[in-house]
Structures are given as structure tokens and as C-alpha cells.
Length: 332
Image (tube, rainbow, N blue to C red; front, side):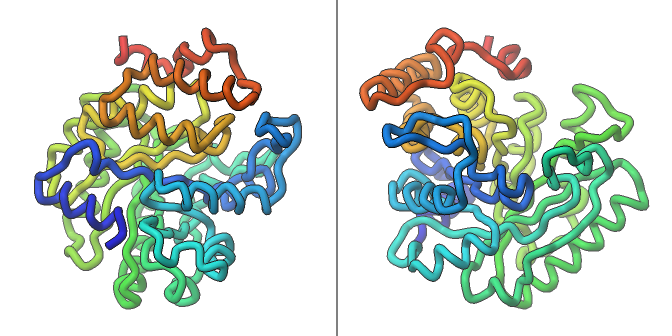
């Protein structure tokens, strides 16, 4: 049994412990940022350079994280999953491979692009029938626009996807973004709108087509607690990482969201842009297990960097600060 399935079974049965917290490494950024997806190139000591890494380095990072035993899911684009499956990376591995099943227009982020500023339009590059031999899990994303015509189009596309995925016995998890464009709501109103929209759209979905879990932005403890406690046996809530931020942000987001009921973390840039991704995820596990505080985790991370001769992006003092205002407010 893959670790994902074992942990989900415990969560749904009400047997959750911090050891059941699910971590996904999201390496699907090529479907958003194009050739900028691999992040910074690194020298032979692992320190980051002022250049973009090639795709081989990105694939190498996926292999290393999968082989580390620290994660439960590796999320990647269909083309990356194909390469890694041909390498038999996931044979005899506890890690579940997952492909990004759709790439709605609001994640298109080429340099100079402005797609994310406009309402999301449904689109799928990946073909489910072609992915079927390679994976049995993938990500589907939605962004609610608070516009009847646009949201109907998105929900109809999601309905069609679910029918096709069910016919192929493909499972999925559902990502719901905070809209980057104006939907007529501000601040504290965004979280309840998204929570209501999620539960409303899934109320008519039977178990065979229901997402395994959710991936959404952290909109504060109250919003997370309300959604996570609504139907914990069926609606498992996960958080997305968002922008890189400081290392303190990474650990605080995990700590605060798990305390509010999140049971999954799907981090992309927070892992990929870290000076030492493997050490970072190892400390993420220790934060979830309450073995170390978020502050101590940042200190231990910098000690590990120093021991390996890796230049940190920020000083320890700067990395102990918050760059996310909400995390700072709720972590105070």
C-alpha cells in the first residue's frame, strides 16, 4: 500500500496522528511558468546561482525527493510523469505519482503574461486516456469567479472531467485557488466564499467521482477550521504553498494549517526554491510532529546549510521573520 492510501484511511477513520500528515512535492510548475519552472541553478556545493536550471535538474530533484522517503505524493506535469515512469522511479516506492490533469488559464504565467489577472478559463493539455497507464491520481484545479456564466463553464468542464476520469478509474484531488482577479469580494470574505463554493459544488457528487482531498490557500484559522470540520471523513482539506516566502513562513504555514485541521500540504516553490529541499522537508515533518518549534526549525535549517557549505539566501535573522502578513498576525 502506498503511504498516501494508508494515511487517508487513518484520517477518514478518525485515527489521525501527526504521522499521518500527507506531504506532496508539487513539481508541476512547467505547466504554469514554462522554462522558469526548474528554479535556480546550483553550484557543486548546492548553493544557488543567478541562472535558471535546465529541465534535467528539475527531473533530478523529483527523483531525489521521491527516493528520500520524505513525501507521499510527487505531483508533476504529464510529460515529466512519463519520463519518470519510464525510469521506473515509482516501482516499489511508497510515493504516489500524480499528474496535473488540467491547466486553467489563470495558472499560465509566462514572463510578461497577464493571464492570471483575468477570470479563469477551463483548459486541459493532458489527455486522460494517455495518462491512464502511467498514473491513477491527478490534480484538477478550479477558480471561482463569482460570475454565473464563467463559473457555469468551469463547473461544466469539471463535470465532464469527472465522468471521463471515473470511466478510466482515475482518482483526483481538487485544487481551488484564491482568485487573483477582482470578484467583488475583499479580505475576510474570500475564505467563506471559497468554502461555500467548494461544498456546494461537491454536494451533488457521488463517492465514485469525489476528490480524494482538497488543495486550497490558507485564508486563516477560522476559515480552515470551518471547512475541515464540516465533513472530515469525506472532505479532507489540504493547503497549497503559494509564494516562496521565508523559511519561517514555510514552517508556520504548516503549523498553523495543521492545527486548524489541514491534513495535507502541497508545496511547490517553498520546496523547490529552498537552498536544501531535502533538509527542509525533513524539518517540515518534525514541525508537524511537534518535535521542534517553527523558530527552532529555522535555526536547525540554517545550521544544516552551514554544515554543508551551502550559502543561505537570507541571513538567519531575516529568515526568522514573516513575509506573509496573515501568518504573522495569527502566529503572534
